[in-house]
Amino acid sequence: MLNKKLWKNFDFGLLITVILICALSIVVISSASHAIETGSYKKVIVQSFAILFGIILLFIITLFDYNQISRLSKIIYILNILVLISVLFVGKVSNGAQSWIHIGPIDIQPSEFSKIAIILTLANTFKDMDEVRSFKDLIGPLIHVGIPFIIVMLQPDLGTALVFIAIFIGMLFISGVRPKVFGGLIAAGLAMLPVAYKILKPYQRNRLLSFINPNLDPMGSGYHVIQSKIAIGSGMFWGKGLYNGSQTQLYYLPEAWTDFIYSVVGEELGFIGAASLILLYGIMLYKCWRIAFMAKDKYGYLIAVGIISMFTFHIFENIGMTVGIMPITGIPLPFMSYGGSSIVANMIAIGLLLNVGMRRQKINF
Image (cartoon, rainbow, N blue to C red; front, side):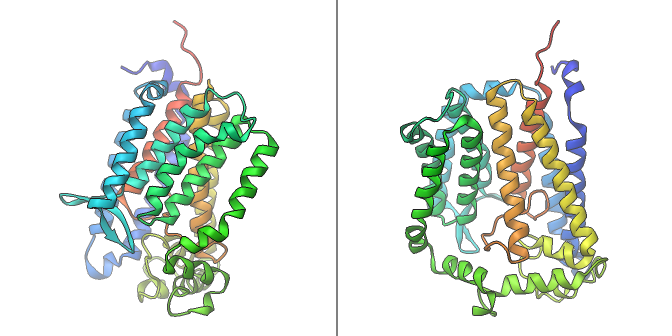
């Protein structure tokens, strides 16, 4: 049983903020998927079920001390790698990536849960390191992240692979790394960019070129961002109203309920709706940072920072690509985009954060 004293540290504000974002998600998905027009509420139902299931898992995760996970780190890492490898053989192809495993009526995207596994196991790697003093100290952590990074790139899923990098950099930075080592790592990464560009798939290269100039291929790789910017711009201050966005309702906006759901918010709810959503994310991240700074040990602090790095990258990249300031990578907007795997994985992440916050103080009997 969970000690009642721990509930005093439960951040209900964080949970309420997440639920508000999820509630907005259901409403916007109903519009983006044309549920009213077609009478098909499948996506709304799936999203609602994923949210409820995720909240149940969230509370289950708060029942045990997060430090117990540290002992299972090797098992978690090995299972994560095995599942990611299995996707390459039995995975289902969707939108050009072999990232899904079909189990009965459910499609699961293991790479979404892999992010959580990387955070938990990398935190265990960094927690015993006082400071990263040399490049030799980076070999273990780089291999730790590099293996799943390569496997996910083979699917290929560039967006998730970039999330791994964001998590690694965030956790490395707060672990105590010497500026010379950190600067050298960044320089090495930049030097590898030409090589990385060459190994990208043709459609991924086109996305990067379209980011620089969408009009190079307005009916192809640049189509998404052009239509997204039109949708957001046409919403102006108050928006066109739910179920009334021309780009959304006339099917001009591709992937409206997943990658480009922020575009629907901008078009139908206007600047007010789009800014309100960003404000909710700001509140969520603030509360996440507050939990991180109050963590009772380095392991909890690292878990929290890893999750914050993941959320921050997702939010910045997704919203950025809808307004044309970031390349299209296909990663979802947390708690907003349609997708059961993403919702459940993000709820698990929030559950871990709440767990760290609840146990920020030792209980004295």
